[in-house]
Amino acid sequence: MPRHHRVRRVASPPLLALLALAAPAAARAATLTVEDPLASASECSTAASQEVKLSWDLGSSSGSSVELLASNASGCSESDATTAVLASSIPTSQAAWPSSGDTAITLADVLAAAGRSTADCAGSSFRVYVCVRLLDGSGAQVTTASAAIRFQLEKPPPPTGLATEVGDGAIYASWSAGTATAAAPAASSSYQAFASAGGVTHASAETTSKSARIGGLDNGTTYDVWVVAYSEAGNPSDASELGAATPRQVLDFFSLYQASGGAERGGCSQGGPADLLALLGALALLRLRRPRRVRDCSRPGGANPGVAQSPP
Image 1: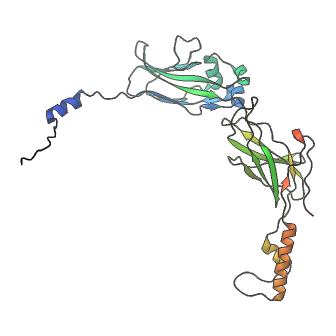
Image 2 (image 1 turned 60 degrees about the vertical axis):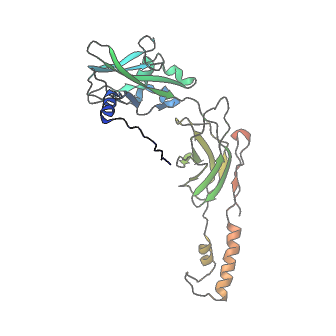
């Protein structure tokens, strides 16, 4: 019986070479990057002092000079009335602004070029655009790239469900994220807890979790405690309702055991009856002196917070 063979067709080497030559090299597009593309309400209102740093890559295009623009619309079209030039006659060898000898471009400059002002900082979030444009010798555009600066102006809701525990010179706070409202629609990105007494306020490290330690406190002093949430841009929420807590020295089991007359110093040696009685006494004392959770005793709205009582 004859055998059938499958025939595999392969393009001849000359044809492959012709195909490779016919495929054009992909052009590399121009790009523009804003170092910090997110601005808070505070940065918006103090726009004159906020510097805008830009860097760009003109891709595979070549031209005679570069200019920077700002606009209220993406693309920075010259036909748009809200487009204006921020800097011009930049050499093509330069790839960032500011460079040596350059005057800083501020958020206020970008807002003005885009037809906006700091009066817009009290409204809803918005975007403005910056563009880099490569020009040829006659001033015609060769290529362009744009990037957005986002002004996030809304605040997040205040945290809820504040609870506190006390430690030696410290307060441990925990809470839940607040529910967004029309007045505070931003998402909560991070948090910070505060404790205040006698006109001095202590703060925890900023955290993305929903618990924090406030250290450096005085034992026996009652502190007001609250938490603030921050949006992605750093806009602070209103403060949570107030809690109150009083730090105190908290002894661990071994310290209580020794304070009760225990002679054992660790290891595998066996103690006598007196040591056993001291151990049991320390355990009972530890249970009596174990710090209780101090709950938020503030009245609705945070007015006239009560002081949580520590166990005797």
